[in-house]
Amino acid sequence: MNRLMVLTGKETSALFSSPIAYAVMAVFLLLLGYSFSITLFVSKNATLVHVFFQAAMLLVLIVPIITMRQFSEERRSGTLELLLTGPAHEIEVVLAKWLACMAVITLMTGLTFGYAIVLAIYGDPDWGPVYSGYAGLLLLGGALVSIGLALSALTTNQVVAAVVSLGVFGLLWGIDGLAAFATGRTENWILGLSLLGRFTPFATGALYLSDLGFFLVVTLLGMFLCVRALARR
Amino acid sequence: MRPLVEVRSLSKHYGSRVAVDRVSFEVEPGEVLGLLGPNGSGKSTILRMLTGYLAPASGTALINGFDIVSDPRSARGCVGYVPEDVPLYQHMRVDELLRFMGRMRGLEGKALALALDAARERLALDEVRRMPVGKLSRGYRQRVAIALALLHGPRLVVLDEPTNGLDPRQIIELRHLVQCLATQCSVLVTSHVLGEIERMAHRVAILMDGRLLKIHSLRPGAADRQRWLRLQIHAPASTGLSSLLTGVPGVVAVEPDGSSATLSRWRVQVADIQAGQYIVAALSGAGLGVGEMTEAAADLEHLFLRLTSASNASPMALHS
Image (tube, rainbow over all chains, first blue to last red; front, side, top):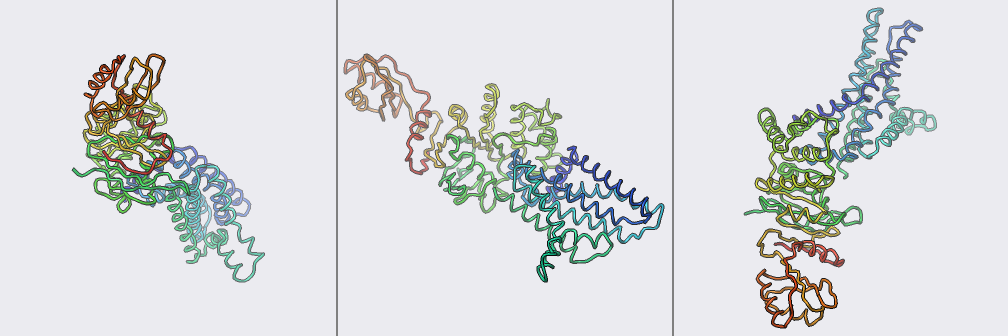
């Protein structure tokens, strides 16, 4: 546990010492702030539903930038050898990187809670969908980080890791479009894989255990694949 | 005394290519063992298996009694490893990196502070302790990497091509450090520079195409150490002269080393340096003058060339 904390501290410090984390957070907050203000002035409704959907879409675009260098750079520079020939286990390294990336995402989404405070000052928002929306964003972020890390562990090229992650996330986000071409059980399977489909209930204030389980399973599966990818050397 | 490292028939394949082929050797406590071989001979792969980065395809090794296959974490705990090209986190400051690695090795509080002080003093890192690693010269980066490897007081220090990219002064300093380390632990060092291995190691394992060709002792007076004499004789080379030299007591092998109309040069392997007197006596008895006779210093070079040029060398582990 102590080693995991040491590793997580090092990974978090590495992320926050690079300009990428700040650039990503700035763009995320700027775009969401703009969208929140415009929608609020136009609709005059005390709700964050549209903010959650836009935040989720931005996570799909932004997470590859956060995860792309996590393992590909360690492989390219050889520091992975330094870590894994010390006492660190692959699982500890993967968990530490996941926690560090989640620290960025949690901070980033946490800062948008300011919008909820604005709504509370000037209106009377329904807090249930607000909490579930944030829970959904963190679950979605966790799953995306996990897949992004696994893809980063497969290559020494950061750009390849980012582009492939973006492709996979995009496919999983909009895979429900494919469901229109399928019927019956296949249609349900395809819809079940859709990140958008799984996220929508959270954003609108409906919590289902199946959606929670889906994000947890995808997160664990990504971590497992990441550990396997690291062991393949 | 039980060897610190026992490598038993270690093999590694990359697809259909055999990178390491049933290699066996031992490293005694306090010994510097050099792995010598051309690029691609399997030196780094052997080190990566011993340090737990790569899993062997077959065979195993015991480090301080811990099996690298069944108990890799305990085995790794006994090893300090400096990989080739010295990979370090460029954004971290020297002290930050040392503290991180020390804590990863389970050091905390006073033990960590003592280990950091000792490492900085030993590797003369005080003046760069607050500098980012990325701004250090190659020589300093090498020192930081060695300091990281020594933090937890390993029983075995593994250095992969440590002289790569160092200037002559840094190479001399590294050589002294390795000799100093050997008073406290064992050292396994690889190089494709023959002269460096010869100066650093007590024994050298010669590798080619993943196979161990021979383990050769470089200790003065070692029983198996081959001694070679260079001879200049005032007579052209001939089979008669070769036979004459071969017949001298103490002469193991004779090889021609160049010839002119009036002078021939020979390399003569002798069991003992005293054989030189018998050679002079035998040549004088035959009415031949000896122009020059010197001990050939680079017997490792000769051995290396002879072994690696034999393309059909069979896998074996000849222990000294």
